[in-house]
Amino acid sequence: MLTRSLLFAAMTSIACSSAFAKDWQVQMLSYGEKGPMVFEPDFIQAQVGDTVTFLPTQPGHHVASALTPDQQKAWSSKLNETYTVELTEEGVNLYYCPPHLMMGMVGVIQVGESVNKESLDQFYPSFRNKIALNPERVDAILEQVK
View 1 (cartoon, helix red, strand yellow):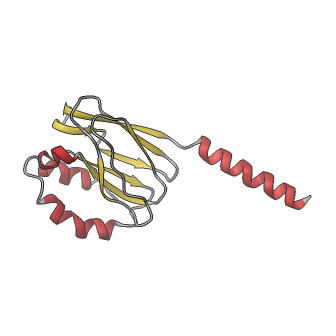
View 2 (cartoon, helix red, strand yellow; view 1 turned 90 degrees about the horizontal axis):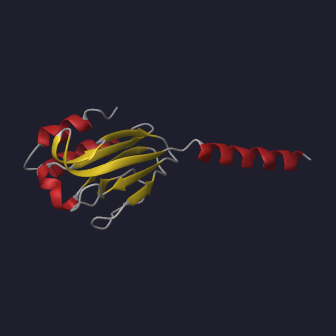
View 3 (cartoon, helix red, strand yellow; view 1 turned 120 degrees about the vertical axis):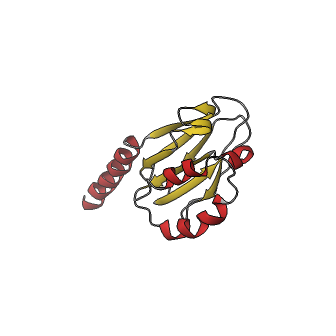
């Protein structure tokens, strides 16, 4: 009887946690509220189990991870295709649009605590050197990581 009760409790916990997961929607835009070549929103504070769906609202974009938490699988979409990422690990995910990185088309997903912030801080200077336009916009996005 105890085993059956534990099994029921475990199944209920799994069902409830997935029921509370959120699917975030991120638009890939040639021009948005913050100017040219942006993701909207460009910063998300998510939880493990959430998903993020990237929508090619305007053509010519796709998305790729530049930095992920250690156990989060790196990801990349195809040009002009909707793409969904399942957030499986706590930490910071830095992502970008490959054709528009030099224009500052970058975003951040923080999942729970920023457990890989030290890795981000080490990685970012060389990544920032690839951004010719709007590097301050990207700096402002990263300032939101806590």
